[in-house]
Length: 78
Ligand SMILES: [Zn+2]
Image 1 (cartoon, rainbow, N blue to C red):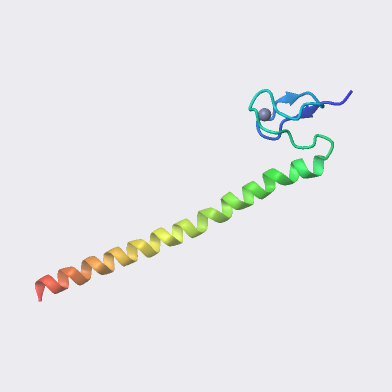
Image 2 (cartoon, rainbow, N blue to C red):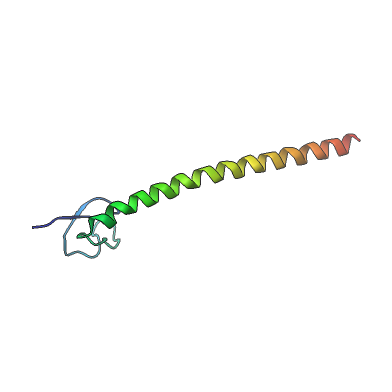
């Protein structure tokens, strides 16, 4: 008897179930553990890679805002 676990919520579901009864998401092939273990890795990598560009974008925006503010202050003063 095989047991399968939902890759979305991690709860035990029937090996014949195609839809998870807990989160109503399609259960990935329970007989392909390679695919199941690969999914969280990709998600982790994507979320980690997303973090860096956001910080760079915020830093660039801050520089642009500061430069614009300095420009207007100088323009008003002069
Ligand atoms: Zn689920």
